[in-house]
Image (cartoon, rainbow, N blue to C red; front, side):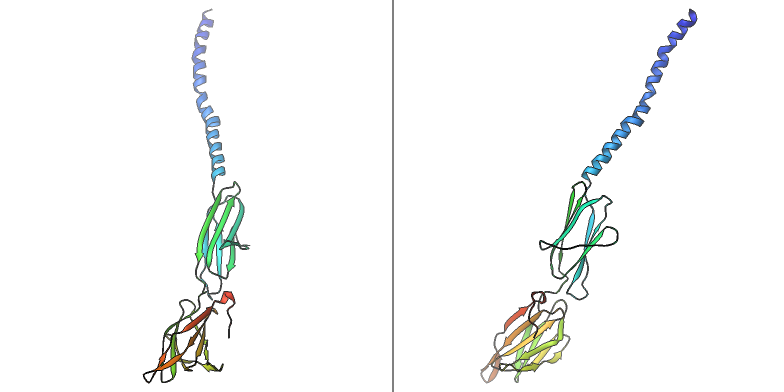
Length: 237
């Protein structure tokens, strides 16, 4: 009987130690997995795309390449790009890279949507293309010779495109006076000399010059100009 009583008195102590040793097991196999699992689920639900949008420099001022690189590993549901609101076709390159060739300046917008529905929108502005015609600068007339200055801020003046037409429709070849500042001269037709010039991107400007006598000297009147950009299909004469 004494042996049984001693054995029974030790059982409560062993039971309490067994219960206290269950907490590491519960923490390791129940609580931590629950936290980790829910953390992963939360990340998958709210994970947004990561990407970079790059506009390349233009070699000819007529076209450039816009590249979209998706940097995140999360699967994407859709990748789209638009220029001034018009969707463009994308070419898939190595990895998760998409590109398109653009022929006009404008606002570019890229939208990436992850498989979980989370979107990313990137915007930039293309301004590396030359869509602005040259302009006339200082002009004057002396001894029957019209001298005009042309300027172009991007691709530069195409010297071979500069010429004039007199009031009878005859072509007048330009004489280069100063190539560094784009100064040209022509024999002046007082009834009207029309000067044509293009930049290297094909944008054209036209200017009509007239003159009148004043105090024995010939005075240049105001210039009537007209211009066309290459992308609008401006006439090349």
